[in-house]
Amino acid sequence: MPSIAASVVEPALRESTDPLATDLLARLRREGPEAAWGKATRAFSRQLALQIYERKAIKGDRPAVRTDGYPALLAALAGTSEDQVIVHGVAFDDTVYLVFTDASRTRCLGVLRKVLLDPELWRR
Image 1 (cartoon, one colour):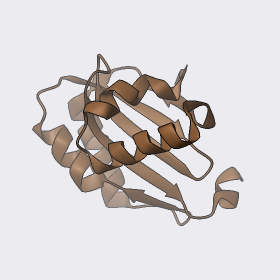
Image 2 (image 1 turned 90 degrees about the vertical axis):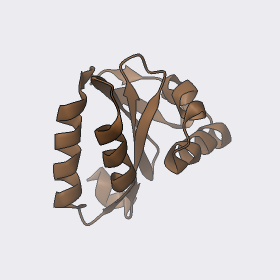
Image 3 (image 1 turned 120 degrees about the vertical axis):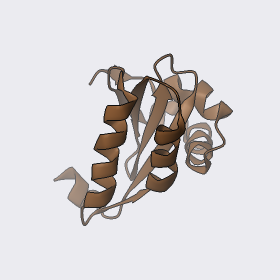
């Protein structure tokens, strides 16, 4: 996955009503985009994204991670007419946000927040 500036997702986050998008936007404003690093996938099928993240939701979290936002994300992916999505990972030391946008990165389709319950375990 290519590296991106965390600020790439800010315009889409500003337009979103998702509480996790609001949370990430507030954190970027508070800590600055340089406090986070980001990566992004290439655009891929929304249907494939839905299948992948449905499986991940069923599988559940690893012991050192708590994921928030699956129900809203899955409903958004199932309910949109977008053909393609891009997944952007925006990472801080203790939290990783997965921001799902349309292929043009203008519309936020949903957000997952992965809270690292024990950041030391994450680094191993």
